[in-house]
Image (cartoon, rainbow, N blue to C red; front, side, top):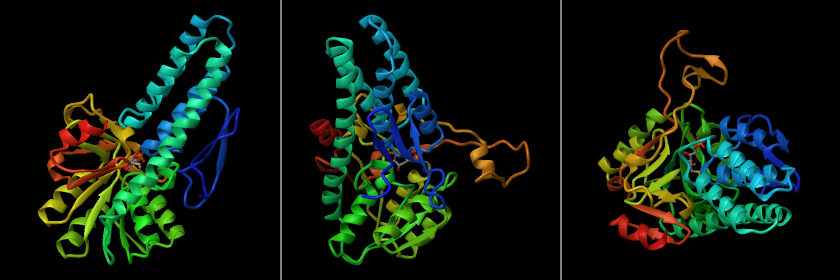
Length: 342
Ligand code: MRU
């Protein structure tokens, strides 16, 4: 796979700066966990699985640099590092899934040096696990995509977001590789244009025909019969199947139901949060208003205007036709299906 979003280099992490794509392919080498935390906040590294992977590497990197001979002091300082990474972005479950695994390793191991080594091993495992899951998701999901389908997707869920095949985009790329004649409509995904900048770029590279549309055009294309199914990723899935994903996803799900179009979510089980009963409990990140009032630094609204900027919305489970995970495809009743695999 080209353009790896995150790579462990032993004493530093190499990332591709996703805010500069598709125009500049800039790689950054980060050797301080604080820089990784900033890169996550600024969306240089983004997409639920990749946030988790980068978070795990940040903890490993932070741990390697702790200079202490007292295990209590080491664990105390490690806790501070984990808290700093946890504070970067609140919605993607994968970040907390990864941090919980890192915490568990830190508390189970013996002396400081072996703990450091085990933390590196665990971060590499989390990376491999997330990447592997996307291949299974893509295999299962591709069965739902028929030859000749036009698929609508939102945000970016490809290799850049997952360090693997992709979730929603993995399904599309896999179906295309299976020789199915697929077309994609990609929402531009305001405010930060992950669809316009990243999804089109990845699909172009994969040789999948793609048409970019503004978010507000989706309903028109669904009503006029141009879309056969909608498939998106997820940032957090509650125990009842309610799903948080990039802002605008809920609107697509409602429109899909109204127009009799299947609406699929593709996500690894690391995105599922069985501790939350419903989507009401999912924390929704509110980002800086200037991401709405400006596009790539250029103002598009009068100075001083108030803007709202929730980064995600919640789609209630009744709008979701199926959730595609690496362990299989789940349908209603989601409570049972999710309980069985998470
Ligand atoms: O704010 P982002 O760009 O990190 O949001 C990403 C999404 O909403 C994706 O759809 C989601 O993380 C799934 S990535 C496989």
